[in-house]
Amino acid sequence: MTTVGYGDVVPKSTAGRLIGGVLTFLGLVFFSLISANIAAFLVRRDVEGKEGALGDQIKDLQAQLDRIEQSVERLQVRETDGQRMPRIRKRP
Image (tube, rainbow, N blue to C red):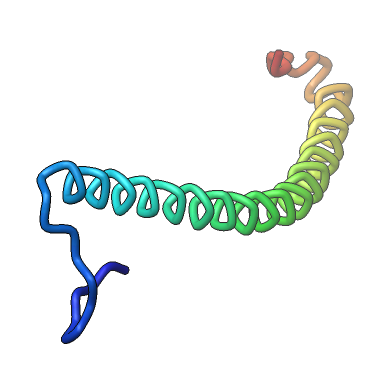
């Protein structure tokens, strides 16, 4: 970052110190923006990869739910003692 070691040239006037402080601050802001953009890029790639796997799991669960609903409908069609079994409400 910014260090002052033996023999370094440092500003002595108030204006010079103010300019040095502003430049130090701007350097920190610039470094922060660069590192934040790199981190956002890496996180975005990771999240996009997980969304694809999650989407596949949701599709599999939807297919299982559809099969279960079809099985329930087949069971409802069967008659018991001459009476039709009550219908179960379907999900929206």
